[in-house]
Length: 117
Image 1 (tube, rainbow, N blue to C red):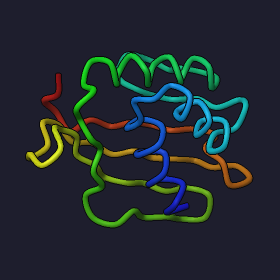
Image 2 (image 1 turned 60 degrees about the vertical axis):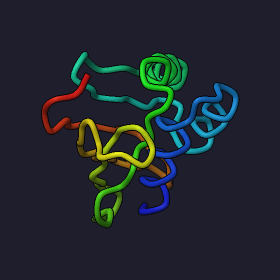
Image 3 (image 1 turned 45 degrees about the horizontal axis):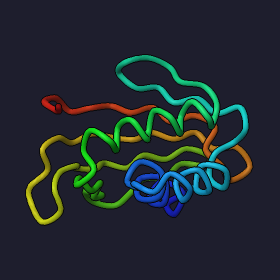
């Protein structure tokens, strides 16, 4: 679960290359996945890929950096993160909460700590 949380942060939401992001989504997420973000619920890998791509386009120089250690409980986990330009303090922070099924992300719920762009 810890690896799943960290890889998703880095390889899906932190990835600028669309082909690598899609490959990571296909490996890490279930077919019937759901992403809960402030704008709404996004369902399916294709739609999540489009959302992640649009997000990356608005902040291509930002990196997602874990804050502390992920916490896990059975098929669930959470990871705190910060996002901002590499080498600078985060511009915004949040939490990813994951529910996994068969070792893949079935549901990701994103909580933002405030601020953001």
